Amino acid sequence: MDNETAFQPIENYGVIGNMRSIALVCTNGSIDFLCFPNFDSPTVFAALLDPQRGGHFCIHPDLPNMRTKQLYLPDTNILLTRFLSDDGVVEITDFMPVVEDKDRHRYGHHILRMIRVIKGEVRFKMRCAPRFDYARGRHSTTCEDHSICFIPASECPSMARHATFPMLIQGDDAVAEFTLKAGETATVAFGEVDEAEQTGQAVLDPKNIEEHFQETAKFWRGWIARSNYKGRWREMVNRSALMLKLLTSAQYGSLIAAPTFGLPEHIGGERNWDYRYTWLRDSSFSLYAFIRLGFVDEAYAFTQWIRDRMHEDAQHGPLQLMYRPDGRQKLDEFTLDSFCGYKNSRPVRIGNAAYTQLQLDIYGEFMDAVYLANKYSDGISHDGWVGLQRILDWLGKNWKRPDEGIWEVRGGRKEFLHSKLMCWVAFDRAVRLAGKRSLAGPTLKWRQTRDEIHDYIYANYWSEKLKSFVQYKGAEAVDASVLLMPLMRFISPVDGRWLLTLEAIERHLVEDTLVYRYDNGMEPIDGLRGEEGSFTACSFWYIECLARAHQTEKARLLFDKLLGYANHLGLYSEELGSSGEHLGNFPQAFTHLALISAATFLDRELDGHNKTPWR
Image (cartoon, helix red, strand yellow):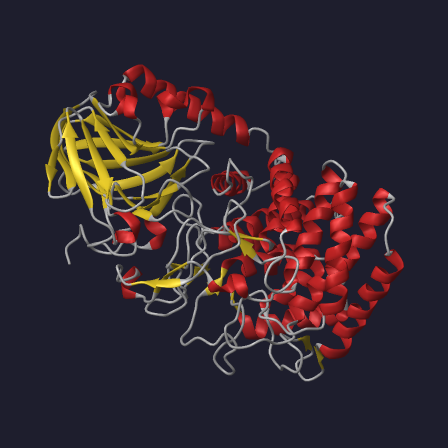
């Protein structure tokens, strides 16, 4: 396998998007992953999962001894890839226009690639090789002037490829070779077919291209300027915020977990999931992150999406743990045989069967989100409050049930501590909300249930042998999800039992600054073979717990070290391998949410502001 078809490391990618779909752009100038037209649509490019069959869109400058550098233009999601050689310097600027819908006819839904030669005379090779419907579908290709149209045989939308240089059809692909001198530019557009744009004249008009660029840069810079974070790690926090905004649906207000699927948690392993959906458990963390940074509009939009889910009973209760970005419940899981998988890690799954699981923790995360929204936004409506009471009534009858838990295990249900913790959160936040907003409801009953869960946790999840809270009832193992106990205000961060638990986590799950979710070797609980990497969100939770326990200098050292594991653009995948390689879906919202939370609290500790904000 040559360099053009070899797998690229996950961390070699940057992402661009328009809050509708996201593309992954490699440091070698190739777009190797794109679901279109929406986050959860079938792939058009998926060389990340199969370099030979997945499809890609590569622009390659012919320069000897070439070096590359990739960066975002400051305070934007506009990506610049620079190619450097003694014989020439080239820049490719990639972005998806984010502009007003009022002139959609002119802007459309496109990827724009602006090529500029800074030094020398450079010859380029270009290949646009879409492979529709997860590389399962055929397509026909037509050419007219400087435009090529790809027409799938499946129900996938047709897509057009426009360029300011001549292109040819080679098989099912569009190819070109062209030369630019210093100071010269070329532009390529790839996206939806608009009948008025099939010749590419509107898309490639120089005035329109400049407007695309300027308005998109203005949008991102204007958005991040609203952040109220002024702390020590502003660049990393702002990049995390910009990434979360990319993962947020402009149409629905929901936040997807990641734009990819099938990226393994261990090379060659079977933990290869589809994360292009919205998890309710992300709601509390995302709302908290957006609110802490001052992005009230995003918090409000997500709140509206969450409230719409209150009226849609799921298979195992009033709520479902995950949904499609538009709120649909069905996410049937099946295996793709069309891809070999990242570094031959199979199976490659799309859909997610975990949507049928019982995960009781989502009710706590849901109520925490509602509570935060009522603190920072408009008060809940009467009908909304009645709906919450219905949900809490169901939870009051079901909180003792075993479930699959936060890690969505496939090895059978257990009474997980984290699930009980978040059931406690659900009733605690309901009691608090009723008091803060003077809302009528069965608060005495909720308080009694909350206190019963509190006592149940202390009676059933403390191990004298381990001197720690344990993973599930009857276990003698620790789990990193217990790091949320002080973060959710269940236990004081300096309580004696908690400090012993923190020490147990350090002994069993921590390697320097990296934290594993659980030890799956002695007694596998997830029903799957093999290992996995450290879970980066847990690493940030661990650091925040240290800061809350006033182990501030240790927390800061580990935080700075963990920041060093980000890729060259400040992005994180779901997990990290023992040698620092990125694993799992990329980039992952949960990780960036945890980074923001840890950074904001650590700043407060370092500044001497020890009073935590009301939550």
